[in-house]
Amino acid sequence: MDLRGKTIVLTGASGGIGEEAARQLAQAGARLCLVARREEELQRVQQAIEAGGGWARSYACDLSDPADLDRCADRLLAENPRIDVLVNNAARSIRRPIREALDRVHDYERTMQLNYFGALRLTLRLLPRFLEQGAGHVVNISTMSSQVPIPLFSAYLASKSALESFSRSLNAELAHKGVSCTVVYFPMVRTPMSSKTAIYKHMPMMDSAKAAGWIVEAAAKRPARVSSPLGTLGGLAMAALPGVVTRLSQPLFRQMDRQLKKKLERD
Ligand SMILES: NC(=O)c1ccc[n+]([C@@H]2O[C@H](COP(=O)([O-])OP(=O)(O)OC[C@H]3O[C@@H](n4cnc5c(N)ncnc54)[C@H](OP(=O)(O)O)[C@@H]3O)[C@@H](O)[C@H]2O)c1
Image 1 (cartoon, rainbow, N blue to C red):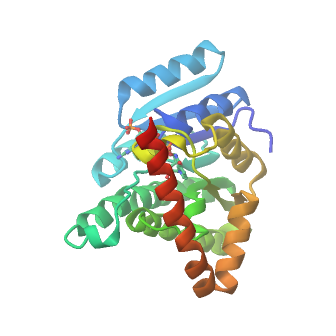
Image 2 (cartoon, protein in one colour; image 1 turned 180 degrees about the vertical axis):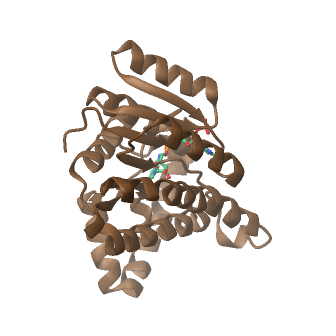
């Protein structure tokens, strides 16, 4: 699909992968509605796009606050007669062992509130417009860590799995009405989110420009999934032999963590 003149609502556009995706989508000719909490950062991204000859508007919003999200959705719908694509990219991540989260149900509630309910609520608000148009596409950002059995991210991964499951239902129910959905499974990407974990300093990661290219691909080609070959293989292995794959992979993850810690200590 040619993205020229298409209106794209992109959440988490004030930094990380979202900021880079906003630039690349604008370069492809799309009109960008930029959503995130930090207004000044959104303005900075908007101005950079406008300076490059593109079109963008800022919509400051805390997507974990349903009332604020509803206000933002009202504005998006009122100011944009047509919306072609919604990219649910904003998210928060928590890295914590389950044994240290025994009295922290709020970890699980907070990640669900933004990563699942925020994305879901915005999708449901824009869906009537998509159906009216007879066309619309949702890009839901997930992670390769939900394709393979990664430890220490239970709250984050549960919220992403919920979003993936909703995405499958959306495709199953509404593809014949012109409304479709892509799930993007990123591997580790060097951004403010991944930089919060000190031991990941020496882990090889994808850069945010390449990751943003996956979002452009999802918006333009609209496949059901954008994934790395390793993620797809991991997903297949987990579907076939979940017990074996989990047993074999966990010592490798522990070893990787030990090696990354050693490298950090040597710094
Ligand atoms: N980085 C990775 O290694 C990695 C790997 C796999 C998947 N992913 C996924 O890729 C996506 C982008 O991640 P990233 O690494 O670019 O993250 P990031 O650098 O932390 O950026 C997150 C974005 O979400 C926005 N955001 C956070 N909380 C929000 C809220 N309550 N309401 C509205 N916006 C909010 C932030 O802006 P404000 O602070 O201005 O609100 C920011 O623009 C996420 O869905 C993440 O789960 C990332």
